[in-house]
Length: 100
Image (tube, rainbow, N blue to C red; front, side, top):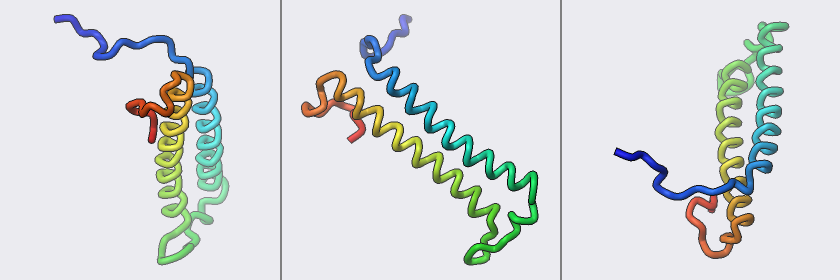
């Protein structure tokens, strides 16, 4: 049984854009996560601070990190889809998976 891709793939014209955007987003998320770790390392008592509705800083910050990762993934997918569509010339013709 021969296992080949379902669709023929060619050169990814948006590769440089995707790589740059991915690295930028990784650095942003990494810096925010490093701040979370630093607060826990340097002043863990600060994480006990109640912010609202009985939720402390640790819970709010942790959930914020999870939501930020989701938002960054969605933004990355949308931006890369648009760039791929624009570079392939199929932006107005309704390219499948163009991130619309």
